[in-house]
Image 1 (cartoon, helix red, strand yellow):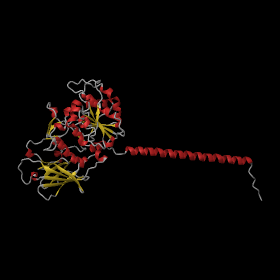
Image 2: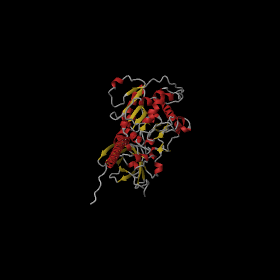
Image 3: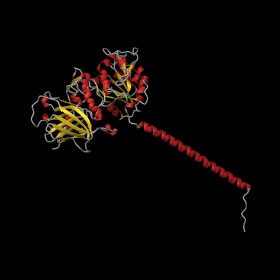
Image 4: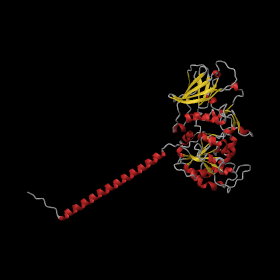
Length: 474
């Protein structure tokens, strides 16, 4: 029988040391791995919370408004334009005046209007434009003074005049296309080529309204006063703002839903051929005819807002379809008017703007050159399309019904003429555009529905099929 020798003290000690080393290594590795996992989890949680914040849809809560006015115009009708679109429960901002109106104490608790802020002293700034108004400096500084209000959770600053009428839901929807953490200056030019040639195609015209993203506005506010010292020779406030943004290296991002409306007379042609972009703003409404017949300017705007409040994204969106039986061409500008042509017209001939309006200023040939395609508005009313203006709009279980009544013209007609119609009824679904639809808009299609009476036309608006073309089917 063979005996196994007992281990020596040296061997036992060596084994214990090895055991302790291995155990310590395992514990250290375990602690390191645990710490790494906790750190990674915290970091991912932080990034996720940041992503969640970044992907929160832009709303009116993220916008601050700066409205430029003066004591005289604000006391008159101009405040009523702002009252049309101001939503006190979800909007922040100020109307900037040079001093308080005499009746201010009567309106201190009026929540249907934004609060009044008093502009700072601008006497230290030079203004050398001959025949201009040095109040342009005060109006320009509305940008920096609005930023100085120091509101929290801001993504966009939006600026306009006291006669700028915004469509708030469409403003927010338009801005949601853009990353508010980047430097953006968003607005539109004038409709008049000559105005843009003089003041610059890179300038957002202030009456149309414009938007500046939060980080850009903060940067601009810090340098604005020193910057405008270099531009005493410029005419307006918007020229000063665009010049300082140019010095910061930022150009204008054009959005066709903003409207300066440098036009006079009847705006029907422009409104009835709105671009595919959502309607964001209107301006200069005191210089044009009321947009609906037999109403004052304010009554007409209030009437338009009845449709805006039901389906803001669809307002003025143009849809064209054809009545094959009579060979009529039907153009629906939703929430505003329906036009019916008594003949077949190819779609590209229907889309251009009818020149129902007059040029902003009389002068050289370029004063009557516009920045969009136009077509003749026939001088004989009886040879124009039959126009049906919005009468009322309502939501129903099957969609939204808007009804349009004929605008009377003393013209003779036969039974094949659209003039025999008295009313057009349009059924549509509420439009809720997503980001992709905003980035790549497409016009909707419509169908002429069978009608029970001979004086009413029924139309249904819908999304077009993938390969659907809009033309007269024979």
